[in-house]
Image 1: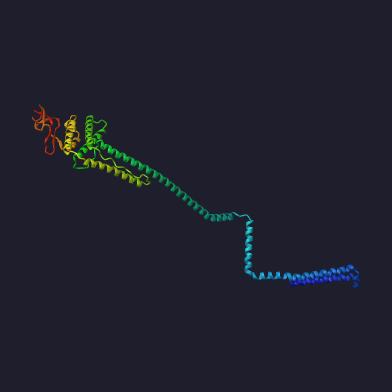
Image 2: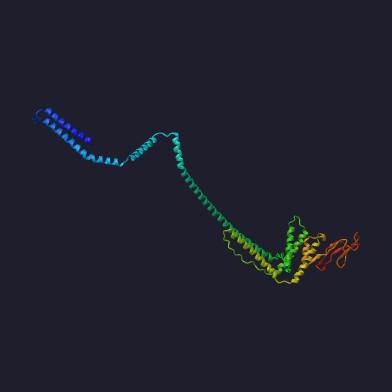
Length: 392
């Protein structure tokens, strides 16, 4: 910088010398300079130029010197390592800029694509996870909606079924009451020691069952069916006339506004218990009603002997009597008089001898049974003599 200043000063002196030289050549006599205006003007211009140069040098020294000091101070603050680091970063930036302006080869493109793919994988995984979570929530919502619809259907089914069970139960009880008023039998078959009333109910029930089984055959015996229908009707009329005014069924009041199978099962159980309770009510009423026991026993005895046994023997031979006959005879403590053809001796005290005829059998023995007889149990007293044919 000092050299620059010296150069400017030298240039100024040179210009000054040049002006002075020019002046001295053109005006060899100094006294002529005053009389020559152009020479004077040149001297004045040279003085002005030298003044401007001097002022410029002075201004440059005072104005430029602080900036120079600032630059020198900044240079001192930056050490050599920092300058190198900045230079390297600038070179890298320059290289990157140049790389962007140049076309990519296949390996670089693959590397960039691989980097992009690696960076996209977490994003794709996150999106997939969110989709799965959203799908799971939709499925859960659908399941809840389906569960709700199923629950509504279950509630509707349970309420309808509960109403149906109550209606069926009322019909069952009403039918029980109607059958009882019409002489229908009460089931006492589980009892061992039957009273007269209970025994009559059991006999009526057995005849009804016998008739029902007979109707299952494609060609039932018409004579047997006629006897059973007549016997059942006769017994029901007897029971109906003796029963009076049986108790009516109690009211059935159950809540049907339910929503679960458990509540429905509870209603079914309550309805079954209601029916069983009414059956017990009828059974107790039937057992406890006042009757003439002796008259009932005589009625049972004559019914089995005359209406049932003798009606059947008009259509069936002794060996052809249905097996059920012996069961009914036991209700009246009766049994068929035993006879072995060709061996049992015909006795007028026990047998009614219709005729005698020649046979190969032992004379005096029974060779044919016209109609079977009855005797009491256990003493064996003859109630009804069998009609027989005696051999000779």
